[in-house]
Length: 334
Image (cartoon, rainbow, N blue to C red):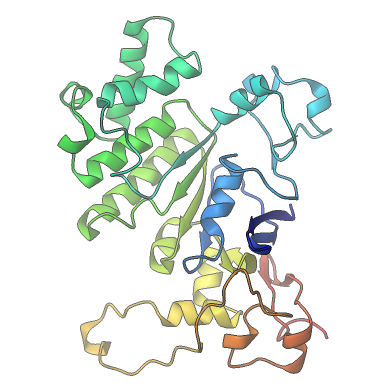
């Protein structure tokens, strides 16, 4: 709720990477953050996983019954939620970390090149105390590799990352994230650096893991085509703000914000017969610097429908249809 991350630079400059973001992720769904590079979507994912500390706001998380039983009642609200943005004891943070995992964008940089696959997957088990013997841990690792379709597992355990393809590395990254049985996984553009032929396999793997675990994903991408295939709900971000949010089919088929319409118009045309047709992309100019955010609506310098109020006041995020929210003065009273 109202999540913020402001970076400070010298000489005195502020970058509002994430500025008052509100959304919820429901168990068993794939919630997608979509936007251009620099819009704040990756920073949002890193905030949720506590890789960076928020400047303001709250992050309410409901732990599993097993973990909740080990958390002091004073750290939870009446509904059993813990605010991850607050300063938590190290022991409690460690308990919560195992339930919220992340898969990074780069499968070539996210795995330690000096460690075998077996050791990469064993490390989180040792850190969080899973498996009391080496045999138990080996069995857990065997099952994790089987689950991500690296079969037979014994052929992959002793390999180093450089001995794997990009798709195989990303499967190892998913195995590492899933091995602690999390309830929420942040997937930060996990297929953007993979060959097109491999992307569908990884996306299907994500859906298979979700179905077998009933976990939730925060899926971060710049590709609306991928988002429409995978996601339950979509939130479109622009310069640190959510400008549109709703069920994926509604946002894709009936976009209400000019920026969402521009993103959809920029998606490549798959039909060769339509490739040479001229398409109007309703957007102008370049993305402003996050250190020099324009007043009023952040999108107004690039919007073809900008009015005077857009230059003066920031639009609220309002519900235009059931569960469909838009931040635009074309839909709000002013």
